Length: 339
Image 1 (cartoon, helix red, strand yellow):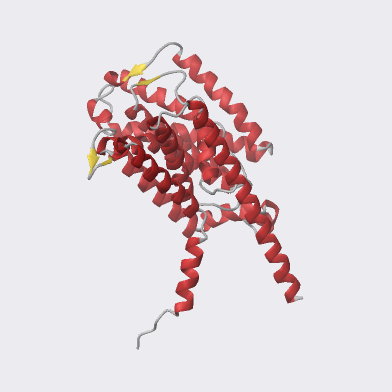
Image 2 (tube, rainbow, N blue to C red):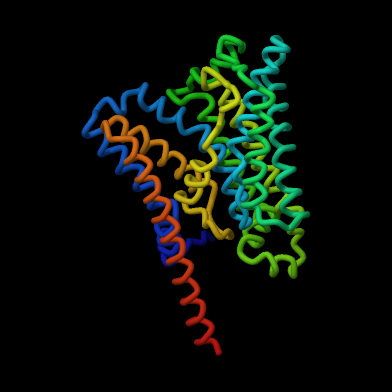
C-alpha cells in the first residue's frame, strides 16, 4: 500500500522555501545580471561569465568560513591577513622547492591557515575577550608578520608551475576548476551544519551561549573549531589566490576581510549569530562581486559601487532585525495563548 504526502505538507515546504533568506538575495542577483546583460550584452559572454565566477570564488570560500564563525555569535576580521600570509607562503614554497607536489602545497596552506585560526579561537575562548577585538588585533599582527617576512619581495605567476596556474584557467563544461572546488566546499559545509550534531551546536551557541552551556554543549570546543574551520578555508582560498592572481606579496589580501563579512551578512547570516546558511553567504559573495563587475560594465563610478554595497549591508541587517522582532512577537502571542 502506497502512502502519499499530504498536499498541505507540500504547500508548507514550498512556503518555507519561499520565505528562506536566500531567496531575496538570489532574486537580486538574477535581476542584476539580467538588467546588466540587457544594457551591455558583452556582460554575459562565455569569457565574461568565467571572469565573474573566478572573481567570486575566493570571496565565496572566505565567506563560508566567516559564516561559520558569525553563526556562533563571533566574527573573524583577520581572514584577509591570514590569506596574505598563506598566499606569500605558497609563493615561497614554490620558490624554495620548485618540484613540490601541488597537493602538498594545498595541505600545507590549509594547515598554516588552521594554526592561525586556532590562535584566534584560543584567544577568544580562553581570554574571554570579544572576537571583534581579538581578531582586529590579529589582523594587524598577521599583516605585520607578512610585511616583515615579504618585505619588498613578490612572487609572480612565472615563479610557479604551469599546472598550478592552470587551476584558474582550466574549465569543465565552462566552469573554472577552482569555482567547482568552491561549490564542493559550500555543499560539504552546508551538510555538516545542517545534519551533524556539531553543526547544530553552532546554531545553538549563536542563539544563546548561556543556554547552550546549560544543555551540555561544549561551547569552548565548538567555537574554537569554528575559528579553525575559518582558518582552514582562508588557507585554501590563499592557495587558490596564488594560482588565480599574477603576484603575491606583503599587501596581498589587504581589506578583503570587510568584503567577506559583508558577503556573509548580505547573504542572510545574522550578524548576532544563531541563523543563516553558508549557501546564503556564498550567494551574497557572488552578488557583491557581480555588483562590482556589473557597475564596471555599466561604467558607473567606483564611489557608487562602495555606496551600494554599504546600502546592501544596512538593508540586510535591518531585515534581520525586523525578522527577529517579528518572530519574538509571534512567540509571545503563542505563549500567551497556551497559558
